[in-house]
Amino acid sequence: METVPYYPVNEFGPVMKGLVIGGLGILHVFLAQFAIGGGMLLCYFEHLAQRGRAPHARRFLDSYFKVLVLISFVAGALTGVGMWFTTIQVSPRTIGLMVDEFHWLWAIEWTFFCLEVAAGYLFYRYGSVLSNFTRIRLLLAYSVAAWFSLFWINGILSWQLTPGSWIESRNVWAGFFNPSFFPSLLFRTIVAMTIAALVACVVINTMKEPDGGNVSREIRRALIQRCAHFLAPMVLMPLLGAWYLWVIPDDSRSWILGGSPAMTLFLATAAGASVLIAGYAVMGLLRQKLYINGATATLLVALAFFATAAGEFVREGARKPYTVRDVLYSNSIGPRELARMRQIGSVTGDPYPLADHGRYPAEVLRLGARVYRFQCSVCHTIAGANGLTHLAGSWSPEQLRMNFAKLQHTKAFMPPFAGTAEEVEALAQFVMWESAGAPGSWPVTDADSSSAVQDDRRAVIERIERWLSEAGTGPGTALRYRPDVRLLDGAGRVGGEKTERANDREGGR
Image (cartoon, rainbow, N blue to C red):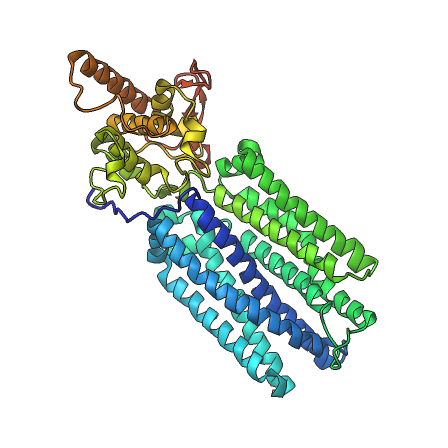
């Protein structure tokens, strides 16, 4: 247990930690993909301008690049720093493992990002006085650097869900070029092109003549038709999405395709928004060559943002119950550490005191609060988003104890409980106390040492120990239904089924 790191914990009140990092991450991903696709679009329009195939391409290019710099460079850089600041608070062990394994590859990604920023600002400052030869090569440098920034970071992020043979070999390249690397890379490239084209349609509708008047409708129509070419690859999205679903683990695919209603809903949102954008692009812009005004273009950008947000939610949720598949659970506890914690406790070595230590009227509640902080707080709040009092506040004491002890079978996308029977009981008492309104006194205290009470406590601990033993320390996602483990249903009755371990994917049975 000396190897298990405990980190200081920052609370965000009623906002779930996952929502904090998720909300910031979605905005950052959208801006980053806009920068990547924007670089490609800039190269395309510079090529058109130099070939004389689009007389007004140069005017659009200069306007679009200002938007790209202001939004992507400034907001993108700020949210990028914010992501690092947030992740080290929410999941420091996960981000630490990623840096440990891929520090040189991440350094390469940063060099490409530096090249992207340098090329972008050089073009912003001197583009108007550069020769055509220098302009196109500077834009190419910007575009290639931006895409390779995606290339490197995509390998690191996709490794979290599909580490592949890295699990056995610990070879950095086996982890980087993992099973979902190429489908996710190609899918994100098309998303980047789509976002860039849609934002371009918004910018085109804001272009002005040198005298301050609006650019004519025909000029805007011609430029929009050029942008529409960047939307055509969207027709490949269903194939790439199917490829991605095929290579991810079976249980992750089951969450997305119906096992988790929330993830299925977000998948439908992402797919539906993408279909609407692709349908408008193919039928309206490419085939019928329709004109798209600023309001419609802005609406399509909003749809693209919602599709990105829903897709990122699905990508993050598909990893459950892990943050790194088979290495770290979502609460940053490793499978081997979890087995050890079953013997000596999960918070035995936690050096950090409770910030509100005096709020709890009994020591068992303080233990329960520390267990909640260590094992539960990354995905749950007390009474806010995904709050324990909302989810489990109506359960009976016996339901709380059994379902916490068999947590991975209660909800298969949750990690097993990492701790002793005493910690299960403490967490159950903590949830009951919070659900009761956090009263100033609590009937379960250490001062009550009557033999009858102590006998009852011993009986409770023995039942919890039996349930922990029956549940095991493996993830619930590795099991299939078998009738020898039973859980409490919502009415407090014994029911449900245990599932048998199925290693079909690994070839063992």
